[in-house]
Structure formats: structure tokens, C-alpha cells
Length: 552
Image (cartoon, rainbow, N blue to C red; front, side):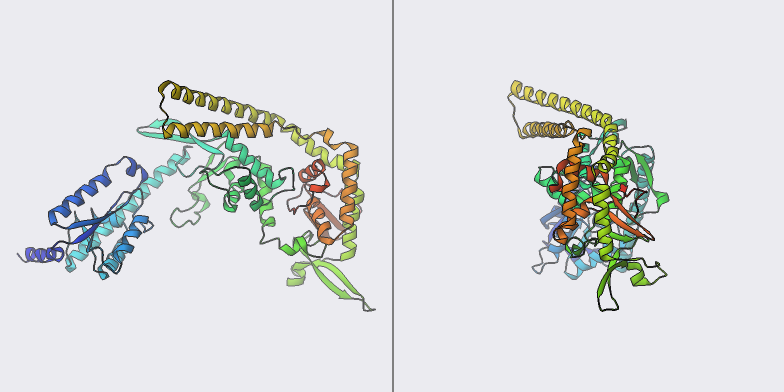
């Protein structure tokens, strides 16, 4: 009898024509698309409100979002509105407490925030009052909901990990250049794998080549310059948006492009990396050559604006940013005064200057001496026609070996174009036969035409004349060598530095030897395009260096 009186007393708290809002939710997008849960929640809440004689003034729905956190747009909008000073709601109605939260602590936190604002949280299937026993029951329900959520999550993760071990795709966003293909069907679910998208793959390869070689009208590009170039030429991301620095950087560092995929790399909630022994590795057809990809990974840190300061490019010291000690530290400027008061300037190891000889013995060389050695060596030993021909022959051989691969890519693109044209023809025939032209048909026709245009553009690029030995005749090499030699010898320091940084990746100072290290692909492109297009900031891993018989 006492229990019945207490229950009746608790139910009178919400008696009268109250203003209420409802909140409905399901956890996954598949449930939101195909399940009847949300309509059923809405119907039961509407029946409950009608039976009570209350007024339902607002409905908030979060389809396909987990209740383990509060990262839910409609949930946040409801809380913000419920806490407004005009007191729009007297109560928030949910089908069950699990729809509101599956975290016992946060459920109680938000319930108390609502309670302070005079808004009650009501579960229509778990009606509880305000007595201590009711509060304990609500917390127990929340704890069981949280436990069930974690158990479900554990089983889902285990299933997804096994799916990844079998080589199937689990459904994360697909990177540019890749797409999915259905290879099997288990029950009502498709089993998919990642495959190469021939059209987008060409764009991915172009991005890597832009970073290394440029577009033929300039030297190699940085991440921001690539994003600008792509947007200016009409290229778009996987989702149809403009490219930004982050999108380009993600492409340049994605190991899926060399055939390596990794599942379970990091926690989806905290975004923290998981231990390596929990990673599940898979394979996909490579898009980019392994050596090119690794070259980019080594070049990215050294080209970062955080690493290469503006003074390195425009400062008054010729070899700033190029000269480095053999210990790996940069060479910095140091001055000294001679016996007659004459001031001398030196390149010296920055590690030794900052940390002492425990870090490095401290190699130093007079600035004018190193400047002259570098310029003279480039002029007399690299920029001579015979030496240039020998260095560039390796580039020609490598590109000739890749010709078969390029031909394969051309055939694949031609097949893609044929299939796209066939699909477009069938769409046009459908329109002509049925006289039905709705928005979906228009969108599909526009998509096919856009796909064909992209394929045509990539085919035109791949079928362009390739670099060959005829591009490096003796006269061309002699003219290039003479003009560049003049530009690195004469003129303002920033002007000369631009040419040096285009030709060299770094200058390594060691005991009794100085190594000049550069990139043959950049050198080949510079010869082909002419000295006028040489100036560009360049940093990269070694591709060529001074001959071993050099006196330096």
C-alpha cells in the first residue's frame, strides 16, 4: 500500500497540460535507412502524450548516431533549447533511457542539467519517480545500457577485424584513386574489396609527380601549390570539394597507394594510435611506385614551412639551407676577426655551436671558399654537356622501362572510356524511348559525361610525347649548361640561390670532402623546359652526387 501511494505521488509531478518535446535515436545509418525503430518511437511517444493530455511542441531525431557520447547535433540542439530562459519545455520524452544516453555518468550529468532548468527527463517505457529507490533504479538501468553497448561494440569490432583479415573492406571512407567492388554476398550483406579506380588513380599519380617534378612549367611544387594547381585546373576531391593542404598531404602520405592497407590502426573515439600488434594489414593494387612514395615521405619534412624558414630562400647568404654538416645538422654563419682586424665569415656546424663538441667535432669552412667551390664544381663538372648527358641517361633509361606500364594504364583508361560511353548511350536511348527526363536521369547523364571528359584528359596527358634522348642533344645541353652557369655565378644572391636550390638538394661538408647532392628528375625537367623555369625551392633525398673522382 505504501509503495502504491509513493508511485502515485511521483506521477503527480508531471500532471496537467505540460509542454514536452521528444527525442528519438538509432545507432547506425543502416538502421536509420531500413529500420522501423524511429517511426515506432515517434508513434509510442505520441500515444503516450495523447493519453496524458500533454502538448508535444517539438521533436528531435538523430538517425545513425551512437549514444555513448554527446556528439549528436539534434541532441545538442534539444539541450540548448530546453535550457533557454523562456522555459519552452516542461519535460523531455524518450522511448527508453538508452535512447538518451548509453553512458551512465553522462546520462546523470545531462539529467541534472535539465532538472536545474525545471525540465524533467521521462522514459515512457521505464517510468520512475523522484524517490531514492527510483534514482537507484534509473542508475542501474543506465549501467546495464552502458554494459550492453560495450558488449555490442566488442562483438562488432571482433567481426570487423575478422572481416579485414579475410581481405574484405569494412566501410571507412574510400581514398581518392580507389573504389569498392562487390565480390561475394553473405546473407543480406555485400562483401566488398578495394580496387583501383583507373581515372582517379591517374590524378593520384599526377599529384605525386607534381610534388617531385612540377607541371612542366615550373619546378617541383609544395603541398599548397599542388592544391592551388588542382583547383585551378578543375580537379575535385572524392566528395566533389576543392582540394586543400590537408587533403593533398593526406594523399601524399597514404600508404594504400603502394598497396598497403591497415585496419584497426587507431581508436575511432579517442583517435589515438593503437599498438602495432593490433593492426591488421591488407593489400590492394599499387597506384604509385614504391621508390617515388618513399622519396616523397623523406622530402615532406624537409620542405615543411616549419623547417625551411623564409630567410633560407631570400636571405643574403648563398648556401643557407643547402649546406649541412656530415653529422646532419645545418651549417650556420659564424664570424671571426683576423690579426689585422679583418672580419672573416665561416659556415660552421650548428650542432657543435649549440651543444659543443660532444654533439659534433665542429666542421667549419670559410664562406667565400665554400661558395666558390660549389659554383666552380657545378660549372666545370656538372654543367658540361658530356657530364650532363651521362647523368641524364639514367633518367631516360628509367622512363623507357616504365613505358610498358604506361601503355597498360592507357589500355585500362580506354576500356573505362568505352564502358562510360556505352552507359551514356544507353541513358540517352532510355530518354529518347520513354520521354522521361527527371533530375536523377539528368544527374546520371552529367556524371557520365564528366567521367568521359576526365578520362580523355588523362589519356591526352599519358599519350603526350615522352622524354627521350633526342631531348638532350649536345647543343641543348651546352646551351643549358652555359646559361645556368652564368646565373649561379652572377647576379643578386637570392637570384643565384634560386638556381642553386633548383639544382641541389643539399651540400654535405665532411672532413676533406664536400658532396653535392641533387635530383636527376628535376635536372632532366629543367633541361627540357629551359633555364628560365629552373628557379624553384627544392629539397629532397639524394638522386645524384658529385663524381667520386672529384677533387672535393
